[in-house]
Length: 595
Image (cartoon, rainbow, N blue to C red; front, side, top):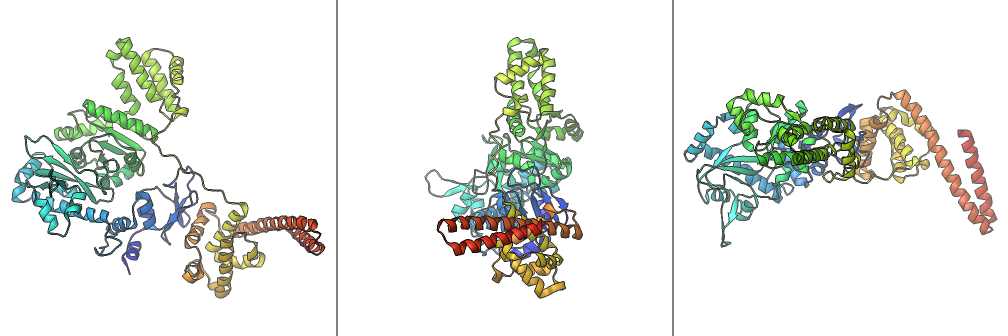
């Protein structure tokens, strides 16, 4: 058994996909809204027995590997490594599917992280460990977050990694070294720093933040630069540890700094992630939205933190998230607040305010309301934010509150919004990606053929009934004809011994040349359109479909015959005319019998 099959056997596709998409049981399958195109009615189906998924909206489908590839926008080798880690499968490093550059860089970062953890507890890490103890970081927290120490050396890490077979270029690409000014050689980027590994959502180390241990160091924090595996706007610190708590609590808390996140997790707030000192990006918001639509922002209380909060709120409004803002009761950030007293942090969370209330408190101060110019600017600012609300009830609620606070008519405010062309219905959303074009709608015949096949595929005992009433030539789609022909052959071969599993195994044989992806979609399709139907109801449905299918077929054949008849009449081909007239009469009689 190779690694791919071993991973498929050890992982449950439902569990893996539910890390990204909420699913609900639907017969033998599971369903949810597709993560690859915008939809409100679920058309994304997952079959746990066959371990595959299919969306009937955008027609995408595949196995556990194709899902991760598409979801994370990565190559197969990266998906293989991610899933191997989840499954606890050891991959061979010489496997060509594993050894792409990104996986090499992840290996470098993982090995570096483990090395720096050892350094923290060595003689050279005494000062850093003392700092950690003074910050009251628990030993288990150091282990969980893989916190380590980069020694005060220009080439310690470079030598360590070189001895393990990594090249200078690879170490540089991982962001761990800096090119010398003369262009000859490299030196270690991180020296005498407490190191916080940055892990992606799957737990792989992709970068680092280093806090200096020197009191006179100009740069307090140094971060890994952008690299093939690290893109700051696509990573949320601690999301790999917080995602399950976020899903369970249906609520995410976003803080600024890595240390804030670490301290919050120590205090029991396991649903906390950090955005590393900047406003959230669209990609980061979409990552959080996989797990919840409820978010609380707790940025630093200084001016930069509040500006970042406002920028983030605008993006969250565009993403239609439910937003609150947390103001810590003590200190400038969650770390200071919790170190003073964890109860103060709990109280701060309980006092979190809705985003619009944050704007009211920030801009409609007594000082602003007392000065007409400040009052005007504050009103314009809040009107601009109200206009971004998608929900009409929310929009009206805050508009009334603003009118009351300013002691002016609601109509005046509405007119002001209207003049600025900022009504909610007309607000442009520049941050949300446009939905993909809708796929071409299937013809009635193709749709009916698909439904007939999906019933027969899932209830092989009905093939006997179908064989008596439906000829395979009625199918307009060649693919449908091939599948139906094989269903009939298999039924006549196995008779009562034919069940769904035997059918799947037989039709999966390569020599038949059938489209396996389409066959997979037929297995799932049963629960999309016939969820809750029993066998007898499905037999009646099959009978109705066959009747409609044959009527459509006869109408099509009559149309074709009439077109040929018109051509025959123009060319005075009397023999062909007679033949076509007989065909039309026959089709007409068949239609009469069916109706």
